Image 1 (spheres, one colour):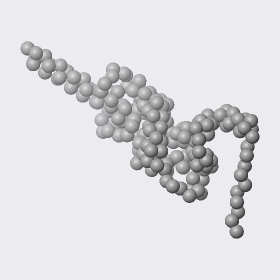
Image 2 (tube, one colour):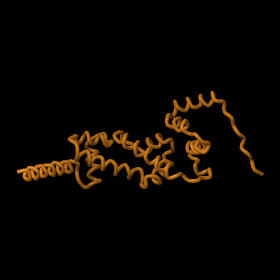
Image 3 (tube, helix red, strand yellow):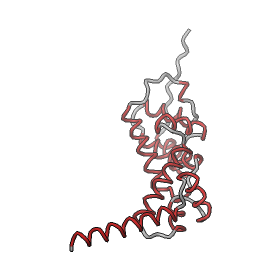
Image 4 (cartoon, helix red, strand yellow):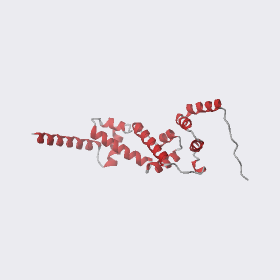
Length: 186
């Protein structure tokens, strides 16, 4: 015998009160709730909220949804790298548990959160060292380290070179390029 779930009607004013309460506790979840336009989106939201997405039959996330989520994650990381992001912070932003967020991150981004963050921090630091005159302390802060020593240790372990060596190479390369350009002009 099939059990039919009763249709539930929630008065509009009660729904607005619930939405206001949710916004006070978790603005990200309130935004997601307000953006839900179909019953399926609402079901997915509720399942995500309770980390029960495995409980409903899935038609699979479309590549567009996956791409959009990957873009959302990338933007969040780029905009907040200086804050020393953790998986917990990302999970809170997305509205997931850390475990679910970790699994989702691997599936969508193709690597672990820690591996992605390590690679992203190194790439950003190399770029800043090569293209700006920021001090090592400023570069460290920009990639989420509280001090220059921790950053230098991390960077050397990740690249085999100290940040100072990378900066020195950049200065040396620029000097050679300037000399070469001046010689051509003569």
